[in-house]
Length: 261
Image (tube, rainbow, N blue to C red; front, side, top):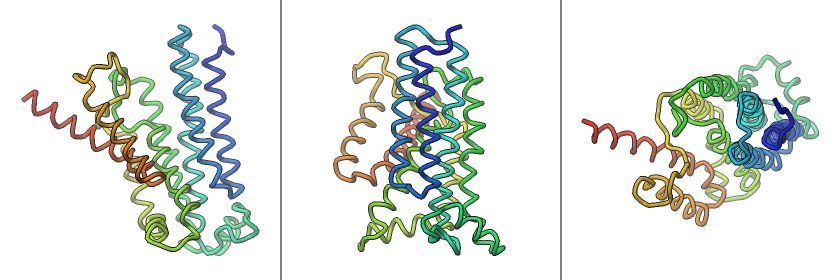
């Protein structure tokens, strides 16, 4: 068993991206942390691609992939959202930008509102079960059942990027993002998206057996829509694309059920 092959090294690099994203988030740099997550997602794609290309697929790589994904697409997004929500506590990050300093002082006040940030840990909680379920679920070889952790993480990375982009501006973009990241709005979003990780909702995968339109309609519609959303909405498109993915998968599931009746 070759441990340090090329696909496994890509997996390890994915894990390190998650670790660095966590460190940056705790340092208050939510402007940089999401880009480490995106890099991790790219590495996560290529480790599987290279494993198939080099015929180096194996149980070790499968386990390493889940461990790396737990950090980059489970713990890291939870910590980043934790830091964002910390801004709504009494102390937030006002103490020289030191996130942990603000957290410890906020908890010392025994204020219930200071517990809101911990709801972000729902993300790694459900991510762990999602990843374990995926490893033993033989139904997910050609498609997904439940929201994949990378898609869930990419959805949440829209929030720090939008907050950095519009947090200090004036206009509807600022008002909208500040409304969304209020705990009373953000916590239900976290709960719903996290529960979708372990749901039984069938979701299509971007795996092409051929490139003809027939049989790939949903994939092409999704990819074309993604291009248009990115072109017109930029940062806002990140979360919308994930919601579109869920919507198209749900529509496909309903149409298939009707066709089988």
